[in-house]
Image (cartoon, rainbow, N blue to C red):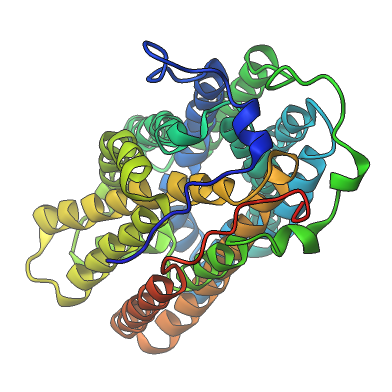
Length: 426
């Protein structure tokens, strides 16, 4: 493997990072822990819905795989339309990151109760779009706050801690949904109601616990640093990261489809379906911090691409089916969790290295938009192929596509001559 990270960051980012030294270098900033708490609570709410939605739509409402593919594409891709807006608005002044993130969390919380009224594919699609638009608004400002509150050399670990807390919520949500359905079989509306209450709690914690201003800055950023997306995209290294994220996103089968494939191809009973996300979440929770620290040492870009090789291994196991039942399902889900632990926070940390702090939100949003757009297209394509040719053909095509995308990413992220961020580049 020959990927490498440029360890150089902008002068301003380095200067603004919190002081650290002996006895403090291992500390995680309070802002990161507060945001992790918000994400933990919010993910309980979101994953309660995610755990039951595929079964609810396909079984209870009788939607075809193509129809579900369109819904899943909306769920994963709607955020792409507003990620750039969230990133740019968050960069516009001191404290704006929190305000934009709060608006995004609030919009998602408002969308949850609407699931109680939706009965058709268009209405469900609208509800999911509202939820994902909220996610799109909040993601870049939230990750910008994490990167701005953390010394550059510790960002991989900080994102790992945040993602681990987020994943603790992802672990709790499906379990809570399972218990609700166990107590009330077919009680999908009960799941949606509890999810709505938990989402509102997450917004409250954000407003009360997350500081509004970071790094002691009280004045807005200069006007010249605002809303210059073309200049941001021309920053050294950012275009290659964005292109790699998009290519890999085009071959990344969404979680919902992965769980449907596991349940159907490995002949698991429908009662196991709400528990499948727990396998992914457990592996993610256990590995997020260690792999975040590993990324700080060996390179975040390298770790990001290596994570996709774990996902490729999961595809291969589902395609070849060297066994059946729970043992093979556990292996696939462990690889799925390893993929997230090695790639999710690493992408944000690697992107932060290439973007000065006054454009941090916009840079993160540009990369996230490319990834989300790729995953939206993947969901639509796999849904269409599944409906036309079956799950085996759809999975085989995605396996080949991911192998090609990973090879392309290896080439694109080869070591390049150092291009430190300069005043001119800003």
